[in-house]
Length: 432
Image (cartoon, rainbow, N blue to C red; front, side, top):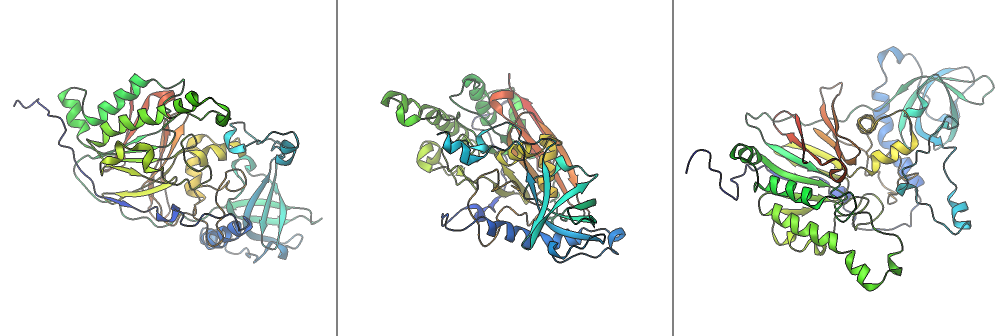
């Protein structure tokens, strides 16, 4: 064989894999508990981290134990959970009266406006917030510390500074001399009007090493894994129970097509599949792994793995944390001052994967602990099904470095993203 000959299947590089998202796998699913317990546990988990992030320049300012301890005119620091009163937020009870159910999570309309009001609350009470700070960059559910003073009339708190939690500790990035890539794909949306089946087949054949020049195939052999971040099939039609039997059977065709494509890919490389808003999984976060019976061909190999959403995995000791994008989209409904990339960066800085849950974003009640609180800083934080590719590096005060990636919807952009395990650089690839 000549030096330019590349055989199939490829002799692909491998990477060790350790799944760390066990806390997102729900053993008991119940709605017996109130959601208030979730906010209490979130505040208790993050309040010490906010205290640790108050700078020395504010060390002389007392930190009040509770909001109820506020006194007019006294400068202080208070710590609590933001609650944003959205003037444009529909009243769900009115929708029931009108015989229509509005699901906010399915709406893309921004609910934020200049008429919104910010409150800070804890177990003792709440206080209205005023001052010269960026109100539109805060959303319900974020735990922050605020330096300022109670107004003389006792009707609000004038904010001077905002303190977020410290970033959690991070494992050191392992050193390596060779390139090894992880492919991030999202939004295949098989069966939708925007999906181009030939383009989807092309990206699968490319990742499997079936197409391309010998040079390209050698590059592809360095892609050690593929993570599919949600929305593999099209958005389901409403009122499917009223469809004729033939139409209902047709609803399964996108899954069959995805299964056939993934079976091709899993014959060449490991693939992790996360559910998204459009996929046949539970509606509330954390979404549970797709049932193995949905992808029967792919699951016949040991290379196909069903993950929850959010998911966390270590690949050659590089920690990936990601979602299928509902958390980023929900933040966008509640604020107007942040781009998709900035929202994802703030997820890291707020130290919470889904701050708008359960107010806007549906989630399971969690009476004992908030599963979405970050206890470690990942090396890579990604969100799938975004409108465009964007990336940045976020640096922490203790030397943490995180590659933040908005993974675009493939059906709308034809783009996937490769992440280099060696140095966290990214390579976006577009398929025409």
